[in-house]
Length: 181
Image (tube, rainbow, N blue to C red; front, side, top):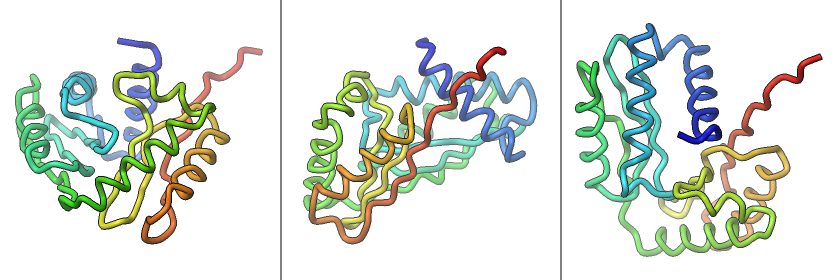
């Protein structure tokens, strides 16, 4: 597991733990780690999907959105097979099947990942910037290294054209380790 991926997982786990809604015990931490791995290894998980989850006492709640109906069912089955999971509540939303939305997804991806500053995000097997398009509305989710990259992604996505309304930029900036003094 790469340090970058592990860092994202730990940051997400820390954020969720801070809300008091996930990772109720150490068993939940193990479930979250395994489930993160299994979902990210799912070969059909793409930049068009954004799935997250909560774990409490072995109970998993899947949230987010996918662009194909079969992915929702697949991810529910994947979660159910993780050791320690007792129940799975699958709240994943299936985005409308739309040629217009598909075209907009491609335009936004080309605009973001075609920018020389942003190309470093495209080289990962599962890039960290996810593009969720629903009925012409674009939302960016995932992680970037700094605030400048977040802003560039939002500007490029907004310039891709034909979105119905402004791009919602929910990209998160990765936490930097504290400097030792």
